[in-house]
Length: 378
Ligand code: NCD
Image (cartoon, rainbow, N blue to C red):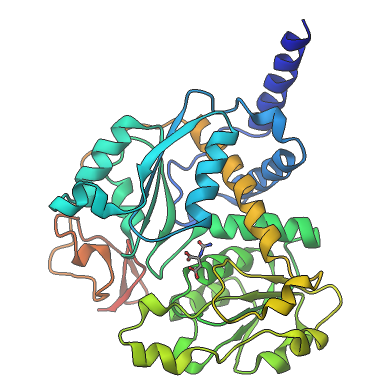
């Protein structure tokens, strides 16, 4: 009897969470724009509820299977997805080293995705090529989540960041947000600016001139009317910040070791700089940290990056639950290529997996690659 009552309470909690709105419209999470603001709010609220009452959701995905295809190294993203599905009562398959799969025999991304999505209900993919998750979505028999595509985007890290900010600041609006480090190659930075631009925030972009944010991200801030400044000195910027988002210099995305060496150790957050900051500053970092935050800062109550990693599991639990509930139809044949146009970004997936249709949006005298957002002037 008691067991029956417990199951009823658990089912009620899940249904209440799922019925807070209609099922999500998006089929995949490739870019943040795939979801409406309402969808994001629902995910954030559900994540908070899951954090407060995890046991109520332990059967939310019972019998469901998630696949994790990680072509690039990962600790937090991969394991938090896997922990999330397990905590929801589901299970997972996948690889974290493509060389142990048929990729080593030359299998295309398209074929791997078709096969694995036939085995599973949700596919989570990380790849070093930009636009890889978008490419996967063209061939997948189940929803695809982008767990990072090269230096382009990382929407579920942003979801993690938003859930953490809500928990720590109680708001996502009117904040002065400093982003520091490799703003050029840091995909978490690009996704976070895109998201926070929708909530009337101000940005201070702290980097060397070589590692400043790409122009398409500046276009996003301009389009949303969000003020931003590009500065060099972390020391000078820190007193003005409500949030400081530190990032590592992305060694693997540099053309040569010399270029990387010239950029490392420029920014190091230490106790002395923290003394100049506001009392309620929140310091975030998507992690892994290399040498950009001194260990001594970990004991400062404003350092929230380890809590942030934990929030990521709840954020992904909410996302998985809602995406699993959304209707999904198999994709039809892929769209046709735009004749005579090729993406000029050598890291774009379309320049590596040659069967992919080359598709572009046209805007203001430019073609914008639909996979990697590269601008091509007509
Ligand atoms: C980030 C990533 O992979 O982009 N890490 C993560 O997902 N938590 C940041 C990084 O690697 O620097």
